[in-house]
Length: 365
Image (cartoon, rainbow, N blue to C red):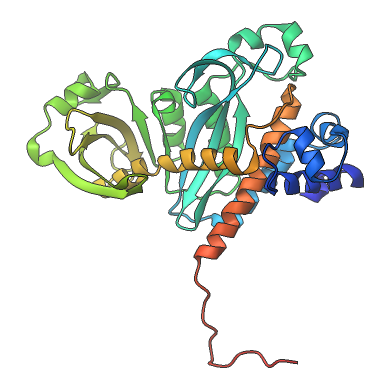
């Protein structure tokens, strides 16, 4: 990513900042990263994140290329999720009292929408967007103080997700599926955009999500209530923190404009020990798709939570103290790059060495 820095000083400072994020400092804020690097003051770090001349979006594109090169696999899944960054005060870009899934309640925080890639070789975060609430978007004074660019307008979280997904797919990321939770799955524009690209998806929706079956419009829970017993199939979707994740699954076809090319389904997950616990997914993909494939894609969503937790715990994703819009994007981008480096190292460590062909090693000199 060095080519994106016109001057040698910020280029070296960015390398040092990555080293600090990968280091063993307890907190990865400006002061502690600077001290880890041997500086008495955080001014160099602050200059890198706030005033130095470099483009975080260009580095983000390099991050995506790096993840694709080392972890890319057409069987992989693109996963969208959001996370809260708890903050004090009212000055940090986009901060306000809003629901944070990280905290599980309404908190004073910023919300970042993140995109991860998970495949057989490993998983890593590869894009980010800061959610700017409408109250912020319509307040010129707050925008100016937090250095929010004039070009930035209010966008919903699903719109931010679609923006990242299109960047990834246009940028050469091959993915078998796209998946996300109800915040994104219930957005019709997001689903339509994926269908237009013929990009398969498995998106969680609420129980009151409307679907069309034949000539009727029904709620998802109503469709499932009439599902025959033989529609359910018990399938495992990998190991979780508490052992194998096994559920009962039902896959029911719903109306689709061109079913010969791209079919739609309502996928339902039911707990084995607690059959009253149901989760619903709207899915789209090739007509030959199996229930097992849909279930595996739905089960892959937990990988983004693991990525976010690791990035916060290992490379200080949420340790920043910047307030500006630019500063947030710069820190988050470099933190995602540091996390991707660790993901690639783990991938290499987990890959057994290939035996050399021919039976002879290289001659020593």
